[in-house]
Amino acid sequence: MNVLATGGAGYIGSHAVLRLLRDGHHVVVVDNLFRGHRAAIDAVAKAAGEGAKGRFGFVQGEISDSGLVRKVMRDNAVDTVMHFAALTYVGESVNQPLQYYRTNTAGALSLIESAEACGVQRFVFSSTAATYGEPPADKVPIQETLAPAPINPYGASKLMVERLLSDFNTAQKAAGKPFAYACLRYFNVAGCDRSGALGEHHEPETHLVPIILQCLLGLRPQAENTLSIFGDDYPTPDGTCVRDYVHVEDLVDAHVTVMNALKPGDGRIYNLGIGNGLSVKQIVQSVERVTGMKVKTKIGPRRAGDPATLYADPGKIAREIGWKAKITNVDEIVASAWAWFKANPKGYAK
Ligand code: UDP
Image (cartoon, rainbow, N blue to C red):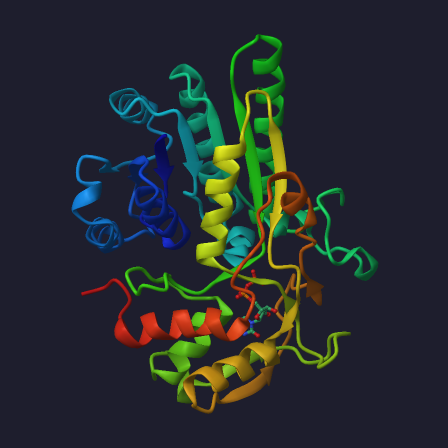
C-alpha cells in the first residue's frame, strides 16, 4: 500500500514506518519535527536498507497545511493514512488545552479533509486509553464497550477525532464512497526496536521505563538520579499504580494487521495492550533484573489524574482480526529499551 505516516519521526511513528518498509509498502512521512527527530528518519532509512530505496520519502511540514498534505498525497498516490502526529503530554494538555485541541483535533480534521479530497481509502488513528478516563475498578480490564470519559484535554482531543472519523465514515458509506478507519487505543507503549535500529527520545521524558533507565545512566536532571514513584498508597497489591505495558513492535504489528484487514465501510475501535497489569514497583524490579543494577527510588506524591489500575482487555482485536501481543515478558520489553538507551544515551541528539 501507499501509506502517509504523519508523525513518522516520532517514537511510535518511526517504528511503524520501518515495519511498513520491511513489509514492502511505500511510505511517505509528514512530520513538523517539533518533537520528532530528523535522525529517526535517517535511522529508518538506514535500517530499511537498499531495498527500500524509492519507497520512502520524508517531507517536513504541518498536517494542517492542506496544500502541502494534498500534494504529498497525490504525488505518492496515498491510499492509507496512519496518523501518529500529535501532542501527547497529559500535564501539558491541562495547561495548554487549546494547543492540544488545535494540534490533535483540528489537525486531524484538516488531515481527514485532505484524505477525503484525495480519495484516501483507509485511515488508522493513534488513539489512547486516556479516552477512558478513570474507569471504576470493576470495569478493569477495560473493554471497548466502556463509555469513554476522558478526564483531561489530551484524552478529549483524541476522542473528538474518533467521533469525527465515525461521522465521516457514516457519510462516506451513505454516499457509496470507499472509506474505512480504525481507532487504536494505546495503553502504555514501551521498548525499542529489537534490532537496535530505533529508539525512544522524548523531551521532556515523562514515561516510566525511559526515566528509570536514564536514572541508571546518570542522565536525569534531578538530584542523585532517583526515580520518584508517584504514590504507593493506591488500592493495588503493592500500593503503586498498575498499567499495561505493550512493546512498540507489537503495537506497530497491530497497525499493519488492522490496515490489512480494513474493508470499505469498516469503523473499528480496538484496545492495544497485552491484557496484563504491572505495577510501578514490578517495572523497577524488571529493570533491576535486566540491568543487574540497583534503581534508587523514593516515594513521591501521587500524580494528578493517575487511575490506580488501567489495563486492557485485548480480546476484541484478537477475536476479530487475530492480533495479539507476542512480547509478553516484561523483561524482554525492558531489555530492548535498555539496549538502545545504553548505546544512545543522548537519544537521537548528536
Ligand atoms: N510513574 C512514576 N514515576 C515517574 C513516571 C511515571 O511513578 O517518574 C508512574 C505513573 O504514575 C504511572 C506509571 O508510572 O502509574 C506509568 O506512567 P507513564 O507516564 O509512563 O505512562 P501513563 O500511564 O501516564 O500513560
